[in-house]
Length: 196
Image (cartoon, rainbow, N blue to C red; front, side, top):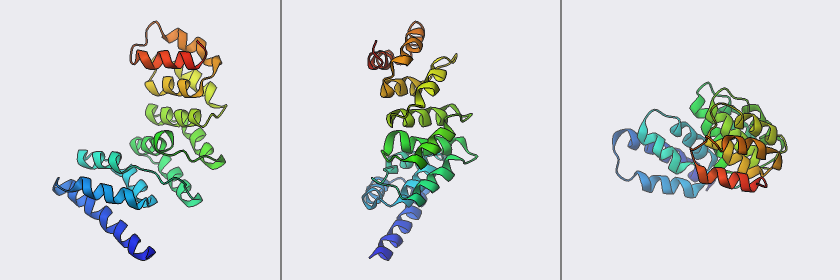
């Protein structure tokens, strides 16, 4: 049975890629079938789709990026490898897996997140810090403070502040309140979560 599932996964992955590049019909049905299988190879392929320059593949990647409830050591290592890719988009989507699609936690995962929390790519760094905040990692507080004190503050930093709810972040949040107009309701929630 496992062999048949494996064959089906590989067949559907290849078929979805061909469909995305050649024709638009029946893609949603294929993605739904892929999601039901919950095989990590789908997650790995979806991250690559999301980072693709081909818009149809990018959309499919977003639809297919549904993480299994648990990740094995091998699967965590695969995400770690993706998180070190030369392509910043792939690194960013690998971090998005942990910030928004997967609640798995553990020392190895946090090591990966800490490693990417100083990435030169803003979005990758932001997703990693948000993932740390969602896991209530104490190291996230200083990382968030640094982001909030930059000349350009992204929504991921403010969202991370809301998730962590650390009162030490309140001064930094109040400082940007006078000029940060990207998402005022998010900023208000972050201030409230941090005790303001």
